[in-house]
Image (cartoon, rainbow, N blue to C red):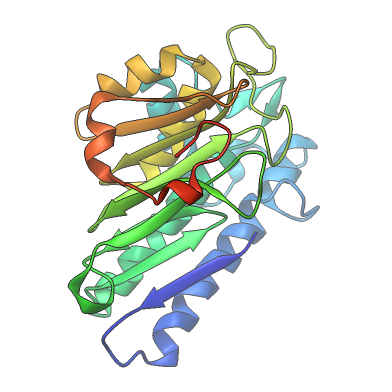
Length: 248
């Protein structure tokens, strides 16, 4: 997936961005289910136990168990007898990258991995960051734009990878929604909540509404848009020419 780090208003030393992308490469090498030599792949082949895995795997499994409890089991890294923490690792990787840039003293930046974004501060000219939520049918359009200063935006859905989000309680693919976006202060939690809420279906909106500091925007199979009450204050009102299939 594409990964972008953008720092504004300051001179960026190559070492800072090298550290960011080296960390992404490290986590990919450990956690990717598509790399045969990753620890996740070795665990699923029975070649490595969780107890024998590296410390980063232990951190991730602890976080996965924490969020499994927090979402009443709708987020789980253990489905179908396999260990796949992908629904958490991407947000965790973005969070780690943001912390690296924080340590280097940068105050206005964003980190984007596969469309999930953590921002800090403001964009150029002291404006909020504009984060587009992609239209699930027309790839060259956005369903809406979120305005944020220092917030995170994460989206889960079926329009990119198909029916890959599973309801752990039923074992069936989640099909009620094609897209579920969560906005809040922390990309790790926003990313996990987006996956869990998408698995919940329409009940995911109630779950996010009851999660202080977080708001949600969802699109169902009929391309109807739904949101939590506080989301409207976060979105940019687009010109009417951007309205399409009932989404604005």
